[in-house]
Length: 437
Image 1 (cartoon, rainbow, N blue to C red):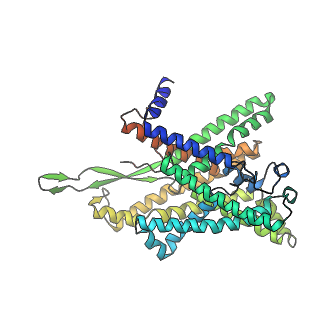
Image 2: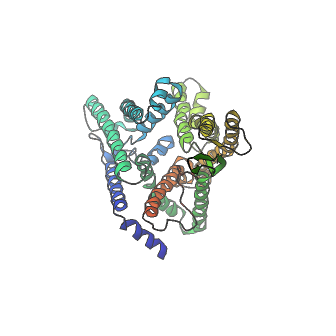
Image 3: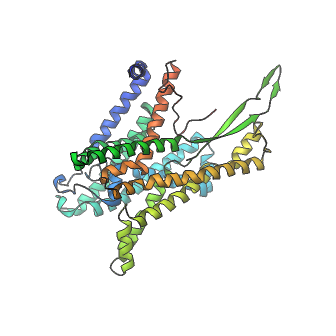
């Protein structure tokens, strides 16, 4: 405990780090306050207290802003959707591939296109949000057209302001701003969820509640292990004599993460899981099968939903890993710099070897990711409160673990630069982007 307080003291003794932490807290407080500002023309007392199904999952990411009909109801999600679209287009469209290779100027153009696409996505999603989630009795403004038009503009402005907050956190604060906003929205629901679960159990089921907390602890440990797991491939660099000095000759490593795709496969899969219930709703009056599909896929604890969800996550893990890691390019860069993997010929064989290793570690990683994603459904089946069950896995847990590890890594780098002891005695904190040398 003494070491912990000393570490806190060291953190706040570094002026730049202290300023960044306070800036981050200030921006996060502004974001949280905005989630309670209701859209003009809506009576908050007539809103549904809880939204269920997939909307409930989305409300968890937004920290209650979705169910509160706040000015931040769409949150940062439209920007993430636009980023995913642009990321896929850089693989398929030559123009965007060219922009990606232009360095900073290309990235600035891609960012501008992403922001413009975010506005269009906001306008489209705001129409669906106002139609599907706001009950008619909650709208107090008589002019329906004026209410919808003004709400669309306000929701879009709220998302743009949220984007700005995220960028300010990245520039002036600590951690990745966009990820930090999502994480704080998720964590904001945790105290209320755990209190509701404890009250629902009562003293008669105290042992069961303790077992739930122990199970949650081990799930978090397993998630951290998945995020941190790395397969190191040794790389030897040939010695080069330049003048009277000898360069190279040292051994380094290529760090291949077991879960290179991160949380993106779950986000991709969840975006598609909206479609079955949406399409089934169109044909529900004409077909019994459509009614069955709609009922099954509107519940996140149904076996049909989770089976399809798990399969999509496995497929998207391989897909996203394939588009983000290019073994051939890695092999060419190694050959150009005089590096080689011991026992493997440089060039094509090196690329094939890296691709084989990547496939072998991605397979168990994808299955493990799918298991973590469907754990909340098993928790709900076991009788855990729906709100508390969301923290047993899925996107919520992966985002929290990843963001916390990244933030701790940045804080530790500041401590080590000032010659203070790191956060952990047993070793360095490795974030999702930590390199292994």
